[in-house]
Length: 120
Image (cartoon, rainbow, N blue to C red; front, side, top):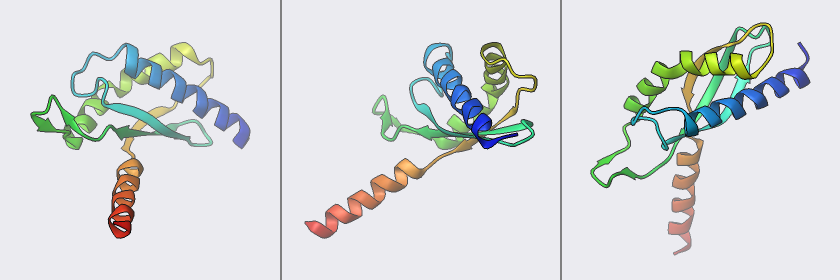
């Protein structure tokens, strides 16, 4: 399959999954804490690696964000996400969603802090 078509499918999947996360998911482990940063679909449309970013900071000022708990919550709803993608996008094969965490934002914040410390 052409890379341009795969890119279109990835973009649409990202739109649908983001919309579902913000409007339909009621799981308190996930709601408002994650966003889709990237999606990579295999050429045969068997799998889609969905990269999620976790919002840094605190939840209710009591406990820090637990990545393992959020990853577990995302794995619980990946079947529902696939179903919603199938309803929104008309393609013959709907890829199986594989959940991955994207820590590039955290890494960028860490580097930014280090650079600011060097300046000051």
